[in-house]
Amino acid sequence: MMETKGSRTPAGAIEKAPSKVGEMSEERVLRALLDAFPTAVTDYKKLNDGVIRARIERRELYRCCQFLRERLGFEHVSMISAVEYDDRFEIVYHITCYGSCLLLELITQTPKDDPSVDSVSSVWGGANWQERESYDLMGIKFNNHPKLERILLPSDYLYHPLRKDFKG
Amino acid sequence: MWINMGPQHPMTHGLWNLRIKVDGETIVDAEPEMGYLHRGIEKLCENRTYTQIIPLADRLCYGSSLTWSHLYCLTVEDLMGLEVPERAEYIRVAAIEMQRIASHLMWLAAYAADLGTLVGFIYTMRDREVFIDLLQALSGSRLTYNFPRIGGVAHDVPPNFERDSLRACTYMERKLDEYEQLFEGSKVFMMRNEGVGILKKELAMNLGVTGPPLRASGVNYDLTRTASRDTRSGWTRCARAARSSARRSRRCPRANGG
Amino acid sequence: MKSGEGKPSVGQVMVFRSKDFLKWADGVMEGILRKSPIGAGIDFLTRDFFNWATRNSIYPLHFGIMCCALEMAVASAPRFDAQRFGVIYRSTPRQCDVLLVTGPVTKKFQPGVRRLYDQMPGPKWVIAMGECAISGGPFYDSYSVVPGVDQFIPVDIYIPGCPARPEALIDGFIKLQKLIKDNKRGLLTGK
Image (cartoon, rainbow over all chains, first blue to last red; front, side, top):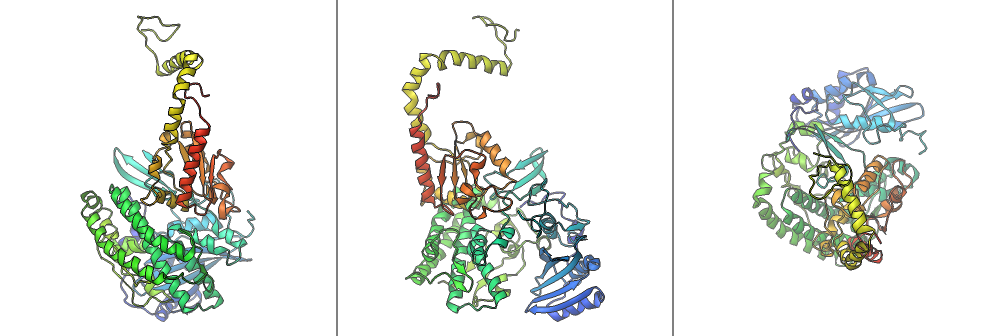
């Protein structure tokens, strides 16, 4: 892997290292989220040791991700995936904190006819390709994404195969 | 000028395209392009039973196929609330670690061949066969094993498996010193590795680098210790906190045998 | 300075553009060698030799797609050693005899495989290694996998297995050698 000049990663996002908050517990994270976004967090629960789930409204998603990274030290987004239900799409973010070994499952939902959320690729560089995959296979649009194009399928492919109405 | 390295290229292992922008002979920018191996496994799983998905999970990453099918079986067992017998857990974990050694030897073979020490390819492939033979005796196949099942494993270990796997591990521990001499004594190999490709810690975490390269960048995080629900007590892994390619290739797993 | 108009005579300085030169040389070859008894004679003497050389120096392409590619690499490892049969992997299709397809071909990559096949100079053969290349394998009903590489290129040898063992690959090479031996052709006349 070479150090390339003019790298395409959003440089502003990575120059500031996250503030060290030390070992955190699941309850502390949930409380911090609720304090920062009292109306946007609609549901929360601790699933397991080191795993917590929270639901957030899509209007506050970008600010919440910035808060998670800068204040709570969640340095790494493991996975961004999308789920289709009868009446909505849910976009699930699995975000990891290496320092405290915590995994946060952040779920946001969009209506069926407008599957779009804000892109978090300027917060975590690793989210860039994950969002392109969700766009490619499920048709979720990510606003302000630097390059929202198909990544796995040919660029002239017409469908979003992982949707329920695609019968292959 | 943009040049395409791939999708068919002997040195970019796997099927992907690296478009590089060159200015004379210096690379100034690069853009990877993937998707030439997208098989639509997620959609295929919609039409298979739970057990039929295990071979598909094997082929997600064929270098580490036991890990993926084990992971899939763990997920289903979690959802169903199944408890796996202890012997089956130990068999799974032992097989995974042996397959991990074989997979890392395969990586080292390809890496050495790319960097000019073709002798590394020969030595590591020979030693990889030791572990492949063990896994073939266990599961019946050399590469995509189809061995874990939901709730355990397909069958018990063959006779003398413990003895053979302990012998293989002792053999490999001796070989580790030989490999260190072989690679660190090779001037070409070290010249192309030392101080090249430095990946800083914050960039590694932000971009989503995981596993050995993350530990080589200085983050002491091991998923097998933190998220493990099965028997891995007493295992240690070293994370050397230096960041170049040379250090990334020096991970040393020390595993309990058998 | 003349360009190649009319038949050049001995002693005349000839200046050709490269395309014209090729056409001229081909015409000479056609007349002297290919259509005459001299060509047939040379072929009769050398056919067996060239065929022996071709079948004992099969050069496949360094082309790994999926799991069978690891077994292809192992086939050149010390234990199975395909090099003793003359099999040396080349990096560019321009220098290869055999296109060894070692995995599923996706619809995104299908034009790429066709292009690789077209770039290979004749005589050329194709070996489909593994179930994915033969018929799509475990992904036969996927939306993005072509069910079998023989849908768009002609295949000579099929090697079953998932993944095909290295011994099976070497057996495939030996069968290809037999195929080449059974179809002896002269280099000049093509018979």
